[in-house]
Every structure is written in C-alpha cells, then in structure tokens.
Image 1: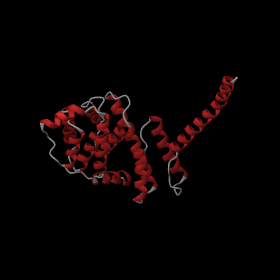
Image 2: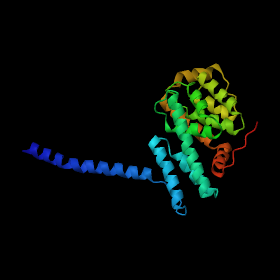
Image 3: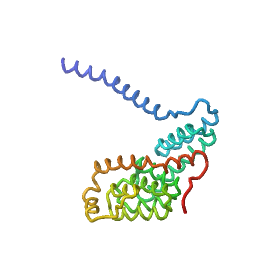
Image 4: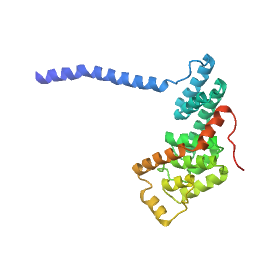
Length: 243
C-alpha cells in the first residue's frame, strides 16, 4: 500500500516538473530573442535589426559582437542607417568567419573563435586567410587568442599578410597563448626553447587555455585599435592603416 502511494505521488509530480522545465526553457528563449533596440528607431529600422539578429541565431553565430556595434553606435550618436549597416555587416562577417573555420575542419567553432575571426576580418583579413590560418593549429587548440592577437597587430598598422605570417609561424611552433599575447604587447616572444617546451607540455590543457584566453581577451580588448575599428564600422569611415 505504501509503495502504491509513493508511486502515485511520483506520477503526480511528473507533470509539474515537466511544466517547470518547459517554462524555464521558454523564458530562456525569450531572453535570448530580445534585442535592445532604441524606442526612437523607426519600425523599418526595428525590422532590419531584428532580421539581422534572427539570421545570426539561424546560423548559430554569437550575437554579442552585433549588440556591441549597436550600443557603441548609439553612444557615438550614429544615425539609424549607420547602426543598421554596422549590425548587418557584423552579422555577415560572423557567418563568413564561422564558414571559414568549418571549411578548415572545425565542425563546431567556439563563439569566441567566430567573434575573433570577425574582428580580424573587419581589419581586412579575408575569409580565405582565416581558413588558411586555422589549418596551422591542431583541432583541439582554441584560436580565440590567435585571432585577437592578429587583430591587435593589424590595428597597430602591420600589413595583414605580415601579421598573418607572424601568427601562423607561432602556431606552427606550438607556442603558448602567453607567447602569442606577447606579440601583441610588443614583447619579444620569439623564443626560447623553454617557451616551446612549455607549449608542448600544456598546449592541450583546457583549464590552462581557458585562463590564458581570459587574459588575452582582456589585454586585446583594451586596445585602442579595436575601438577605432568599431567606430569605422559604425560611421562608415574605414579605419586608417599604415602602409
């Protein structure tokens, strides 16, 4: 009798649990679907921005770069048309970055890698060059730091081809992410045998890589070059580059 009662209670609770899970999933989807578009924007502008975000979701590319472009455009007083163009171009580059990595053999690129590739493409790197660079690293190595360093080098005025060759050479040498970051900071990371040995020792350590990625993203995100890059995307004026 007691077993029957316990079973009845358990069966009664199942619909409640399922309903709670469904409600949670629905709330999560709603939060993700919401895009913070200024109320002052026209209905047409709202529709175009929403369409760009829907395209990003359909392709499963990160939305944060698009949100940043929109927020920074508003902060700089850009027009609706300029903000829309920046968001749409960013979404297009995100798709191109993702596709390039997939063609290079990465079936499911991480959002940080896709966003990093997009930033490099905004600075002038082509999708073909992104694809080629990806092939210089093993499939289990995150390229988020490599792309961030590439963007920083380009922002400093280094020609795209030279910046790509520099990063590719370091990836071929299997240097650590710390060594890659030192390229962007201007330090001499060309090496010592101990740096290469350290890369071989823990290059596949997920926790170590995660820690380095955080450091690199913080360092690279602070670069003034990236700010001018965003400004160029929003205002329509290309970022100046040294020959």
